[in-house]
Image (tube, rainbow, N blue to C red):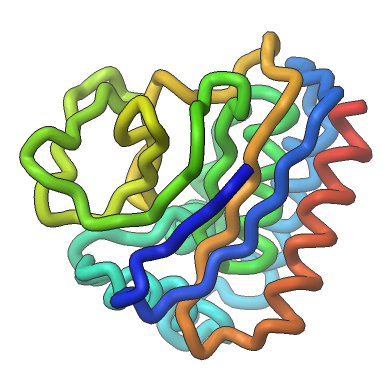
Amino acid sequence: MPFQIDPQLSVRIAATELDNLIVRETQQAYQELIRLGDSYSDRYTGSSISEIPGVEHARRFFRAIGIEPTRRRPSSEALLNRALKNKGFYSVNELVDVGNWRSLDFLLPIGIYDADKLQGAVQLVKGGPQDIYLALNKREMSFDGRYVLKDDLGPFGSPLTDSLRTCISTTTTRALLIIYAPEEYDTSLLEANRKIFEERVLSVCR
């Protein structure tokens, strides 16, 4: 699936498309997420999130796309905050749970989209007044002046929140996986993260 990034953006994207997936409502990945959260809690409870190595990468990515992370927390940091405060996590399905597990591990925002619901090339571009979608919380979200993922059918995802149109369900068999990172993020590490993400998805969704 072709992927394009606004050349004005100082970001890196790692993308993978996987097919022949089986998305279950079992909790193998969710249990791994819990174990990883407990590990962070054991090591860093009482520490400021900003002191934890790796947190700065998601914050730099947000600033690169014009979002102040002290006002809107990156999803990876929101997961870390829940771990440190022992608030627990939500389980959705195996594929979404793998995404949360890897996001907490890499401390980077991650997106997972049903590829059969996408059409044409995918672009990360600054949205206009027409770029609105129904988000996962079932509220309309405008991306006028904000960066958003778009295909030929319109906007469908962002590092803020994704759309209902391309959400993952137990009927998903083909998925687009995305890891978001700032421009200065090490390319070899990002590629290693992409491979790990792909391997983890295949280990629980095949």
